[in-house]
Image 1 (tube, protein in one colour):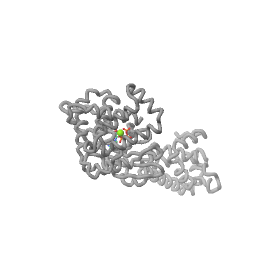
Image 2 (cartoon, protein in one colour; image 1 turned 90 degrees about the vertical axis):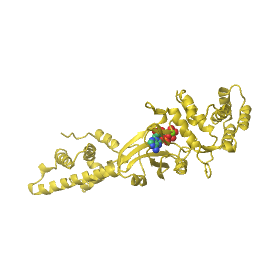
Image 3 (cartoon, helix red, strand yellow; image 1 turned 90 degrees about the horizontal axis):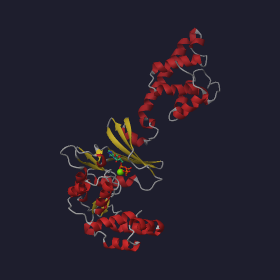
Image 4 (cartoon, helix red, strand yellow; image 1 turned 135 degrees about the vertical axis):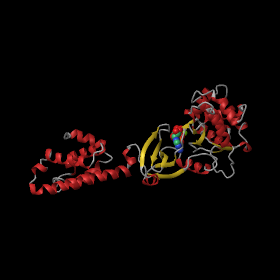
Length: 383
Ligand SMILES: Nc1ncnc2c1ncn2[C@@H]1O[C@H](COP(=O)(O)OP(=O)(O)OP(=O)(O)O)[C@@H](O)[C@H]1O
Ligand SMILES: [Mg+2]
């Protein structure tokens, strides 16, 4: 029935159950079934039992199964089980093992609930976030995020959430997204910020879960609007938001130009290389002149998304459900978004046919080629 683990097997399982091993070892040593710890034995004396108990718990064993295993193992491996005990001590022996089986089983139930997240080794969440969401019933990683930023869907008794985690080692901050989501709340459909925490060099952003699918995966049913049209309509809505009091200006035309100048100074060789390959008929000076003469004027500026790709818009029931990934939103030239969406449809995906739909939804017949070229140059020179 039970096979006593070899030393190598114990080592392997200790690694496998690293999240829980120390805590169960402590419980087993306190229980000290045959008095070895009390007699001065080292902490790892019962590791063979500890490992098998964890194995049983993880397989969903109940108190009775744990008890049955303990009775067998104490006899079989230690030779100090029920068979070796005088009749007068049998009752208290059974009581002690029953008590421990119950204690361990109850402890594991509590552990599973309060540490539901830690059972998934890839995901640790601060206690403050766990307190907000309550018991987590399911965790699904979403693999569309950047490599240094993880995104998970959390299902709980109180609802569904998205948790974004980013390490401080990498540039940028999730706090930019928090501020913008809060500013946009009530003006545009966006996820609601539930909590933002920083702990040990990591940022945690908890927000409401938005139903639907990202625009890039949207398949309209008969009679529903096309993906391009929805993206165009949605962008018109976003660009129509009043910008009075909007504090976010990181991509204003002046700031974009300053970023390009900085890049030229710091990465001269790379900039010259991209000019040679992307604009073979132009010199860098000509491109800079073009930027200067075609910069959007203040009265042309609107609220912009700043990263308007088809992976950052949620569609549900054939319509816009929310804008996502708004960490770069702010006041800028509306063609910043128009340029990036057309790039997203034509370069990042082969959805050329959606471009005219997008323009229809946005409400323009022709693209301003000067503005498109302005952003193409910016995009190239920003590397
Ligand atoms: N609130 C939300 N509700 C539902 N799904 C979400 C939500 N936020 C993010 N997602 C999903 O997670 C994906 C990645 O999220 P997001 O775009 O915000 O992060 P990112 O790491 O910046 O990704 P990217 O690499 O696209 O820039 C989205 O494309 C979407 O599928
Ligand atoms: Mg994104």
